[in-house]
Length: 182
Image 1 (cartoon, rainbow, N blue to C red):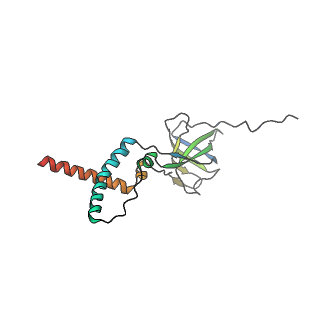
Image 2 (image 1 turned 90 degrees about the vertical axis):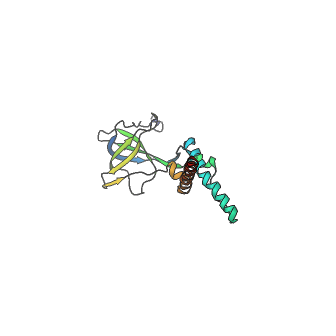
Image 3 (image 1 turned 60 degrees about the vertical axis):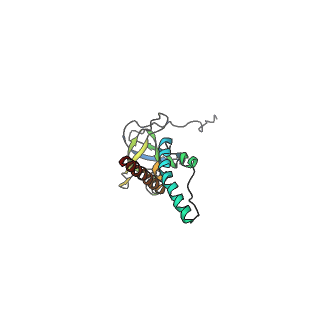
């Protein structure tokens, strides 16, 4: 009797080409982290504007001598960017074709199960090797409308730093306006 090697055989999944895909969930594969890119020019501008207010705050703090300092993150840490979860999902359409797409971010744990009938709105990732990513899921089995959420560059920088940068821009604009009037 000849033994057949079934470990090397795997059905190749397709990357859907359309914007909308209606299919059944076959399998949610194990997720892995991927990093959001943070543009260095944007980061430098935000940190420079925040630095103006930070410098002013340090001067006021030194004058009042109330000193524990702030726990500001380093440039290298901010430049690295946040990570988000990428979960590959295999689907099968009504013509029995197997597709693979990527879910970026998180959904409630009970939102998607194998055998659920779903309608996906997809977006190309710009890399032909990567399957399209899911923008929106309509779970036709449960009637739920789902949108995966990922970390963004702005959420990574955080409201305190962005507020400080906005105040720095306003302060610099005010100084520029005052010097223009005189």
